[in-house]
Image (spheres, rainbow, N blue to C red):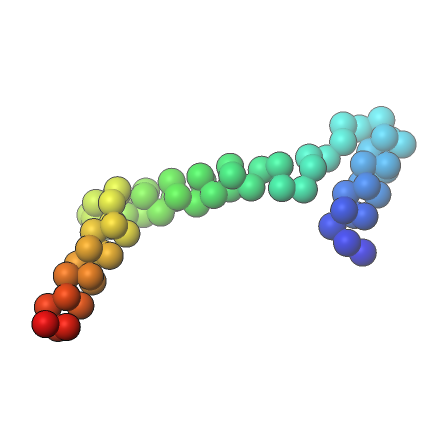
Length: 71
């Protein structure tokens, strides 16, 4: 059964029981991404690391190291 079929079945069952329909597939994807990002920032702060710019700084260090070894 596909995701769409399951969603339609759940919607049908909810309507039969007078309950509110479930959220559409993918409706909360961005919210989950934001919560994961916030959780990563919280863990960084608790570990004593900077909460923002970690990926960009790591990439900058990596690129600097590669340019020195390429010369």
